[in-house]
Length: 323
Image (cartoon, rainbow, N blue to C red; front, side, top):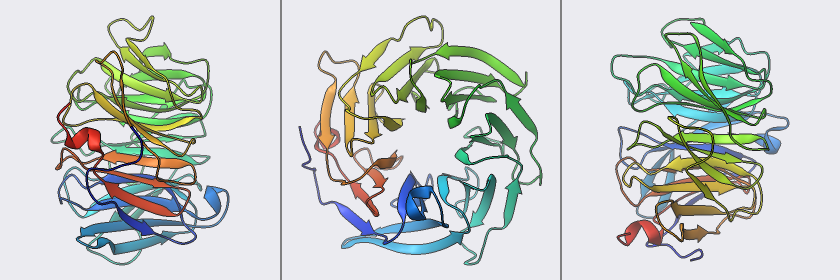
């Protein structure tokens, strides 16, 4: 169940850059964005890398530098060239891969590091949410120079903000205050507060096949599934990571499959509907693994990035062999 892959691993080493987030383009097969920082994000600048896959490996299509570490990246859902990143200086940056120089726009309102950014998948909406260490979530329309709304309620750092793929105007957030919260843009407030773990919650994601199901990953090394119709206890718990879980993603192709990456250097694949849910452990990094994404175009392809200065695209065996 260890680090073998169903095919070759494409690797790019980026010296002096520690990977924080990786996201496949929703438009162009094989195109990947990676947000990275110098000096583990503690000091120095950041880089947004746009990568394309080739037979021989990964090629840098475009690279953009910012004067502070970049912690997350999200692709536009209505323009294949546009992305948003967020950084340690409290700002969001709007980039265009067709234009090789600096950001088109910078949005600076957060008072501390911005750790999470996500572009809404709802058709006709141009909305981005950002989550910050200043304990607020902000709602943005990239065509408007200032935020549309600020959501308050979390009592600690916000690590993750993710739009629902099913319910327009609904997003989830995960925080150091140990909660998962569900918010409604129209009501401009919180709908549900889930005391998800007795530890900081670093990541959350929505199931692509069930509008009521989310997963959280926390510093207690556990993943927990939550049914929003009854949040008194989790509907599943997945144990095995040995350090904090940094990011969790549901599969776009399998209703009960998800992946998680951790400060234990591994990526793990799970099927929460099985009695023995752990499908595979991928152990190909030598530092904290922070970025993780599953391709929307290829049912088998996964990307990750870590503090070991590498970005990898691969096909884990568990996704290439029918479950």
